[in-house]
Structures are given as C-alpha cells and as structure tokens.
Length: 448
Image 1 (cartoon, rainbow, N blue to C red):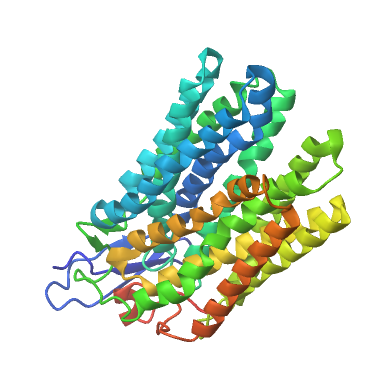
Image 2 (cartoon, one colour):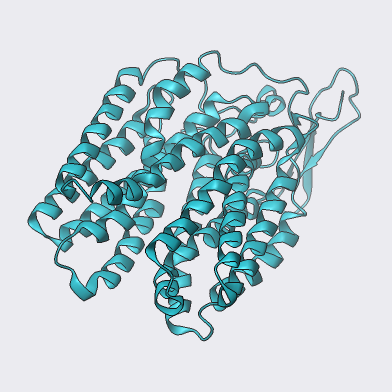
C-alpha cells in the first residue's frame, strides 16, 4: 500500500508551498499534501460544546425546583439517567471510532447534544423530555470524550500538525473539555437568571453555536480509515508491552479522583459548610466558578509537570486532591466559608492536573488502533468519581460529615501510596506515539 506516503508541505515566506516527498519503495509517485491549518481546533471545540451542553443543566437545577416544583429525588434521578447513557457510550464509542473513524462518531455526538437540548426545551410539558434529554446528553458526552479526544490527539501530530510538541493533543483536549464544563453552567446560569425564557434560552444558544461548528467539523480530515491511522504504517504498531499493567497500577488508582475532586469542589463544599443560610445559592455559584476555573487555569502547568520517567503528574494531581480534602475538613470544623472556597480551588486544580496527566499516560501507552478504547476506559473510571456527592449525601444521614471527609482522605492516601509505589514501573519508551512515517523522516513533534 502506498496511501500512507507523504509529501510534507510548508508555507514559505512568500506564501508558496514547499513539498518534500517521503520515499516509498512500492510507489514513489504517490504523495499526500498536508496543509498547516489548525485542524485540531474545531475537533477540540466539539468537545467543548458537548461538555457545555451536558453541564449547563447543573445551573438550571434551582430553576427547575423553584418553577416546576421538582423534588430532590426527581432532580437526582435526572443526574443519574445521564450516567446511564454516558458509561456505555464511553466504552463503545472509543472502540467503534478505532475501527471506523473519529469524524462520524464526533459529528453524531455534537448532533445528539443538540437533540438533547431540543428535548429539554420541553420541560414545560412535564419531566419526560428532561429525562430523555439528559439520557441523550450522556450518550453524546461519552461518544465525544472517547472519540473526539483521540481525534484531537491525532490531529495534533504529524502529518496534520508538524510544529506541535509531544503531549499537545492531551493538553488541548483536556483544556477544551474543561472549558466546556465551566462555560455550560456559568452561561446557562446567567441566561436562566437574567434572560427571557429561562427554560428555552440556554438550550437555544447552545444549538445556535453548534450548527456552524458541525459544518466546520464535517470538513476536517479523518485520521482513521479501515482500522488504521492515516499517515502511518498500515499495520498496527505493537502496543506497549506493559500497557495493561501500568494502566492498572498507575492510571486506574488515580482516575476516579479526576471527577471526585471536581464534584467535591463544586457540589460537596456548598452542601457541607455550615452557617451559610440564605447565601448558600450564591456560595454554590461561586464554588462552581472557582472549581472549574482553576481546573482550566492549571492545565498548562500539568503538561509541564508530566515526564516519561515517572508518574509525577498523576502523583501531583492526587496529592492536590488530598490537600483539598484536608482543607475542606478544616473548613467544616472551623465553619469557615472562605476556607471552603480555598478547598474548591485546590480540588479544581487537582481535577485539571489529573485529567491532563491521565490522558498523557493513555496516549503514551495506547497503540493507534486502541487509543479510543483506552481513552474510553480512562474516562469510565474517572466518572466513578461523580458518585462522590451522592455517597457523601447518603452517608451524612448517619455519619458526621467531618468523619466522611476523614474517610475520603484515607482513600486518597491509599491511592497516593499505590501510584507512588508503581510510578517508575512498566514505563513506555517515548513521550507519545507519533506518526511513523514522519518519525522516519525526522519530523516528529517537538518535545520538551
């Protein structure tokens, strides 16, 4: 096969393209011209918009309770149906995109996210549209996080991006995912509070932004074709021999803390800090903004912390989760809302560190034909942490919240010990898997 032979294109100062063929013993005349547009950006924006659509519901919970009289059980059930759609989509979407391509799965995820918002506009007629919309939003999020995350990684390396550093794909995917999770509740909350038609406007804005994005994403290059990565050797590269062991010993113990830290920062903190009174709603809004804001801001540092020599980024993120939980325990005992917000900031930082660190570990371990599958596994374990607020609320019926926080601290300490003990075991040999042909030609992404 010669369809993977490349002709790398670079724009000269005058705007002309320079081409340099890569040798192919079977057919030296076949080449592919690669432009230098940022193909990864629309793919990453699809992650942001799907995350936006999924998370804006959080800011509308108070509105639904007040305007529609939904009970706490009803609202919690709507959150639960989201997970029912999410987990199978994470597990299936990554495998399917490995076989058939990233683009169709990503396009379907964005379209399904829009459909979910259309359904949720029907809240005025009852709860069924909300349940249906939340279920569809869960499926859309799972598909996007498994397929589009892998797509961003592949579009952030040769031959589609000749100038990016190793690890750029993980950082870009994580940053835009976190940005969507932050923008959704912030923009949705503002529209629900101040715009006309609060049951319609947040969803309508999201749909309006997704329509042009779909058209742009449809024009992006596909990186997977017939089970192989375009621009690479047709045969599957051998997976890292210790990939499964490192995943189980390092990635799996850290993954649940990705979202356990985040949800504790914006959901548990406002619920357990005593003495807030009528200011609890405003305090909860501040906790959401601080937690998700710090998650986004810390991610450039997370990339710099990462190293191929050990699990430093994962250890740092889990240690931050431990520190955040410790500060939260002090805030509960001291009845200090200010310390509670400090805990939210630290827990948000932990979320960002662990998301980037986990994706970098996955992208180093996974062969091209299993990247989507391993990404789906990572996010499935990460979403286990979403149960943290539910566990805390359930246990608080019988156990003092200070003791619950102490229990979480102990669990986090066990994870830290486990990751630390295996940090240098079963290490991959490269910062990240790169395009095989570009590597042969000496055009691998630059690494720090």
